[in-house]
Length: 109
Image (cartoon, rainbow, N blue to C red; front, side, top):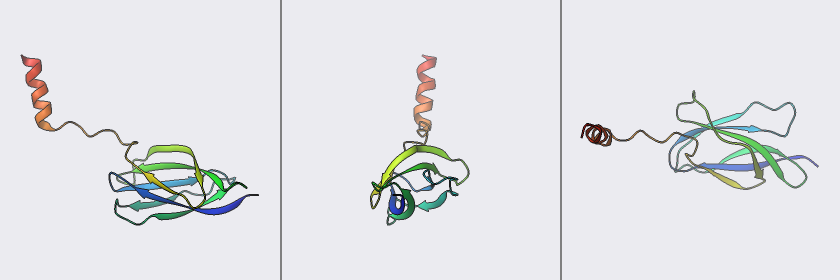
């Protein structure tokens, strides 16, 4: 039997916006969006679950609330469980200027 249960999210590595979409109801409800800082308390999100207290969500992340990146689609979630969202969806930062200059110097020699 389906129900609605609470799952929880925290963030690691950096502060970010999260967009969580509950995948089980049809039609899908609007996503839940919020901003979390690394040291913030966990954030509760209501998710539809099947009889085994397991649901499915899409998790998107953003640094600016405009450019959303997939963290994980169809992520299986269990009632009363906390999920830590890291920065795996974000591209790596560009190398520091000194490394870029060093690379230019290497190509000249």
